[in-house]
Length: 182
Image: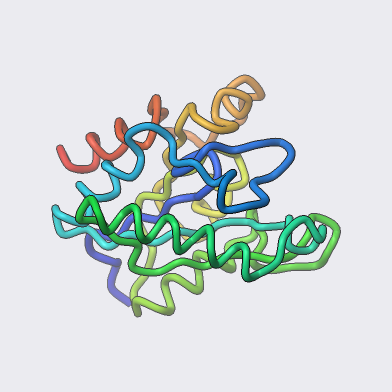
């Protein structure tokens, strides 16, 4: 299978929008990080395909419903569209950390679903996340892990153990700048 051309996979909480240790539980709590939606729009306008893969254990914990999750994603899509951007494919894992799951990162199931959707290999595909589990799932599918300092990124950095050669960026906008310059 040939590698995906100009595909990027983004984590959601802490990369696109503000994160919270108490979870993002409502549309009002879903607030984009400064510059993140503009960065995604720049990707779209440069011909990139944007996918989002997000663990959403708040569903399993009963903190919000699937309807609320879909409303959060609709807010993201609507705001992105006003900037000329889009998310081409979005997958989420509804399972909690104690449930057996092949989709909950660091398992690669969501990334494998993205590869199947686009009919290509993720070999070398950039994956931008703020936690070690995002990067571990990327490594599992031979993708290219990239860490941002936003969200849980600083905490992830302080713990160490990042994959070799995983670049670190201040935020999504800086990571996108790097992708668009390469």
